[in-house]
Length: 566
Image (cartoon, rainbow, N blue to C red; front, top):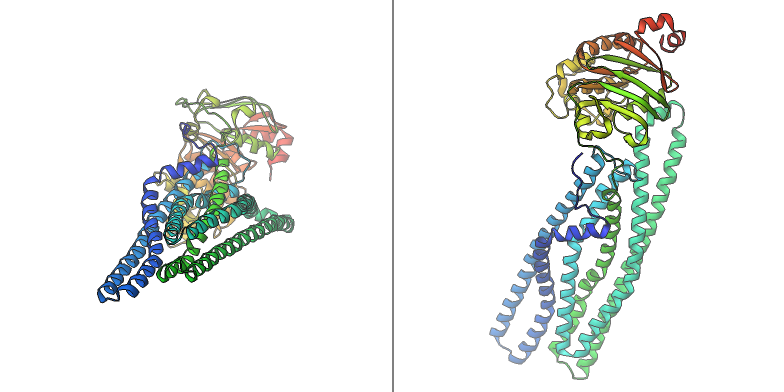
């Protein structure tokens, strides 16, 4: 187990502060350029007002030419500052989202699972949508500041014409933000609930896809689909609620901004009619009143995005702050590859006790399938040592004292439902690209016919979950991957349930030959694998009730004979 991250964020607020802190440089540059953009946009109606004022007063071509040059500079500044400012901010946003995606994925992929009540589909949603929305804070803050710059510049310019116009903009802006802050909190709460329901729907889909074939087998697919429809409908209803709140927020913001712009325009017109401001100042006021709607709209929308980012950050904190389900040790197994189960009580296992010596090939015939699954989970360290009674020793050392990485390097438990990934046959057999036993593993698992069937050989493309392979081909591919790893201790759980009897017989002989001198445990009821083993342990009602070779057990144990004979 790697050293715990002492800088791990403790809450959603910590996540947001971390994102802001490590992007200070990009945000400073983006804020400066976006501030230049907003200042340039604000300067445009101010410049128009001054042009009208001086042109009417001086009536000279020189003044007109200077005015045109000033407008050209303003337009150039607006164009370039927006282009490069948004480029800086979006790059920082994308990079930060990537960092959080990797961090959340790393938590989900750690050897020791985290104690969080979330399914894999929910963690996937957090690692994608929530990571993206959290990183939006990198853009939100500079845009908020630049919008504030535009409002302040407009208020100062209008205040210089008449103090009442400047005060009107300031007071109106404060009033608008006060009204919208209530809705923004509602948006944050609704968004958090929506993300949670969408995540639950995603988790349900993942479960359905995984179990689709078994569900079809016993006719449970319709009930499963109804269950998903209920979860999906809840997510849809919540999404509609969020859309309504967002619509109300946007409509309220637009209406209030329009009221403020109208108030500024009417006030400026009244002041000009009363002779308190000039025609040029009136043009400037009217232009600013129209322009100010855009930064006000942006300024008023930013609190909504802040609340959405905070809601997503809180969901990420569920994963990032969750403690590991166990605290592993730091030792490594001894060179000897023996395995000892000493009075283990867990699930269906009752004081289970046996030992497998280094280099031995042992088969375990479990009369109750659940007992085999429980034993495989314990050996794979999917079950924390503290949650079961008894002791498991690998290489003479207590499993609880070993680091999980060391156990994974020393012991490989290949589940009966091993995942097949999108890629090629070769990448599925040897994901790391470092195994030197790929040809031997392909031959031992009887995958040679699949390789020979396709012109690309081992480079034949495999679809996600092995959709273009049969059940037997997927199982043999998973077995080939386990054999190619060439681990000191290999545990196979029902590796041949989807293959025919002839192929099963050949696989049993090949595995025994390839693993000779290496510790191998097979949890199976296959007569071929049981016969290939050095000895067989009979696991009944959670304990070992018999131990001998397969053929001796067939001759002396009627229960064993009826359980495994085909």
